[in-house]
Length: 485
Image (cartoon, rainbow, N blue to C red; front, side):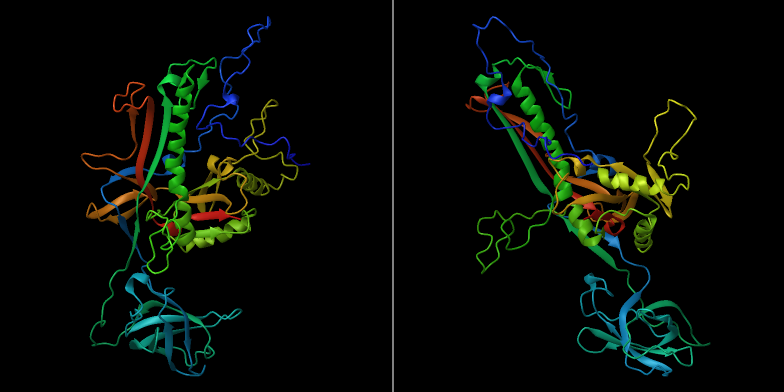
């Protein structure tokens, strides 16, 4: 059995720029002697329609007084190089190893001309990455790295074993595990500088407006309207104004989730000289939203939801290679939530019938709880339904670009704040809004016109304006996981 397509959920927006007949009663036939019974209060058939709450749960807001927000994140402490090769025979006692100078091995901030961070006297392990191979060898750096041609370094390594057995030109990993020196020798030659990854983001300006004429403000309706923030009354424009406000508050969050940077030469990006592209754009910058950042610098689980423990083990093994944050929260859609419930229920050996898990007090009138709030397997995972991923007017029900969930590390991280000039603790997710001593652009609202108490112009209307300028900072994106189809 399946849910029928018809009747479906209503996607027609209830907010329009003009009054419609569907918003008001149209039968004013006073010659009819029979009057209908009316329900004055508007029925809230969709419940709480707002989708905002995610950032309020996991993040914080703090001011910023610049067009550019920059922060530094730690690089790896230990050094490992991949796809290293040697032409030496497997019986050699020492060999020249070629180390590719690429972004897999090096911090991009260092540029392409840096030498490998291997120094004479350091001991290394070389592991053969050929599928099915179990070979590895230990060695010591005999000669410091040197440029070996375009984009590669060459370093001489002497082996501890008599024969190293790794075949010529096999791709290997090399990592440092210590050092060894003879008696009476000088110390380690050269030193290493700590690497930082520098990230930045730009705030975007978000606006909205509601306008109503003075004449319509003087007209009362017959329906008592309500909104999610508790506003009520018989004046229809109050409902429209409050819904505009609620919609704007949702956009303050969803813009931080979905924002993408504008590519130079694109329709919305900066004008690209010599191409004619971007002529219609206002040189917009865009911003790095959460989904964009996690997709670029975080972890992506594709091909559906993890439905068995083996799938989650793959997620856990990836987290082991990242920051290994102890507690994590998965914000997910309904299907993903059910998949986790079913996965956890299946761990009960008596759960074949699906009725023997949950919390029981042997109460015959007890309602069976078929859901779980979280589990522990290596790390603590808590799950929380994310309305934004379920709402059919937003991401719920879409096919292309579907996101099923987002794993967010709990707690805070220490970063160097260039504005403060010192290390500071920040939530992994937080919003920076523009503010100074004279201007606060976190959430601005003002009224213009000549109606509704405004006396700013000769416009016979009331215009309620909304504005915010903000950006989201996703710190330690390597600790996040996005689950998508």
